[in-house]
Length: 289
Ligand SMILES: [Fe+2]
Image (cartoon, rainbow, N blue to C red; front, side, top):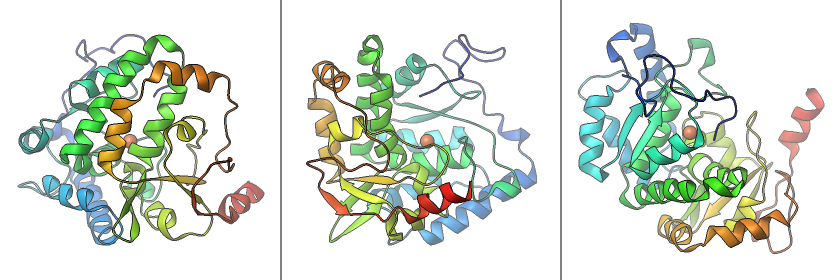
């Protein structure tokens, strides 16, 4: 999913790009930053996040407060779904990323944001990677989806369409919503790890909320610098997994190559629109920029 990546592992990293987490190197302030963020989000998310996410949060309640030690975390995660978290020095090449996922290893950064970055940080830190992603990896169905995505990625390497596949990851793993009971709940890691976006994605009248459609999602550009202008709502994790496994991506890439991309706020014929957004937030931010 990466743009400015090195071509070979940097010094100190293994051939698969992993590095030790070096848990002992975190400062008291680093641990306190985690605790502040953890307390704030675990208070905000009940009633907002998907049941699977809330259940998975227990995996993060380790014997000590502060940033999870990956060794202890991995024992629990391995017992739950066979997933592991491995530290990497930053962005890794696509093939390395997909290979880790296909083998049920989630690559995570090991730095934590500064205290003046509690509310927003563009690059993923340990809070985003671990608090945002690990609870869903403790869910058996979602764990299988992540692995299927990695396997699909490996098969897609020669097609020149990884930008399209990355959109599937973005609009599900990072910024996905799911129907649950009578409502819509959060599960995307970029949302659940963000204090502001975990309100905005559900409550704000600005963004469009559209029922998930694989082809539609893979045509849709996304923004990395602010809250999303569209969220896609899956019917269930089982359905997402099934579609990912059953779709033959090769002909889909061919079809998508002939279709124009859609902008983040565009609507398209056939959209099952759950909320038509006002785009007021994005318009105001564009005006202020
Ligand atoms: Fe992420």
